[in-house]
Amino acid sequence: MPVYFNLQSMQVMYLGRYWRDIVWVSSFYIRYFITFGPFYGIFGTVLLIYLVKFLESPWIACVTQMSHIPMKMSREENRDWLSTQVLATCNVEQSFFNDWFTGHLNFQIEHHLFPTMPRHNYQKVAPLVRSLCAKHGLQYVNKPILKAFGDIVRSLKKSAALWMDAYYET
Image (cartoon, rainbow, N blue to C red; front, side):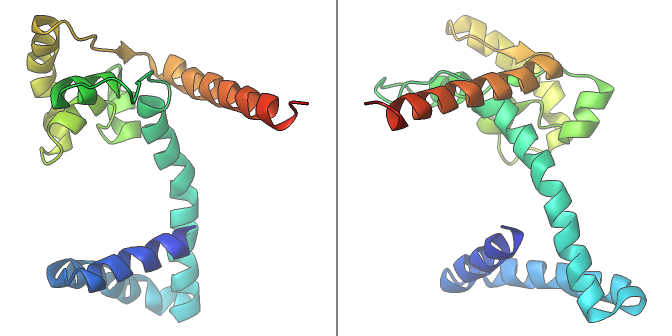
């Protein structure tokens, strides 16, 4: 998966002529090889890059899925942009650990509303978003991290049951 994702990203940048992005991505790999190449060699450094990506993948999946998958959002409902962003995501309660573990992406609602805002500022804008949601009658979901993880499992279990019913239907 990490190999495909990197190749696909480079292809999109090349075909879209995103030269600045290509320079930045290339500079990452150049710096990576300058830093680790003398210790591990070329093959070892490539292996390290993909080992880190392999270990990072479950983390990013958990962080993003606990804020998206459990939300019940109907595609048939015609909603405005604000309502869609708020109702399609949820937050995980703010704490030192949650901020660190999620990289401040525990403020997923704010992330969807202000995608270019530096993540460490989400907690500053959260009270304003909460009041905006209250003003427009939108539910602002903020849950403990263990409940968020449990919601992932419950959602996957529900999806598996639907698939099993459809697959084994006689």
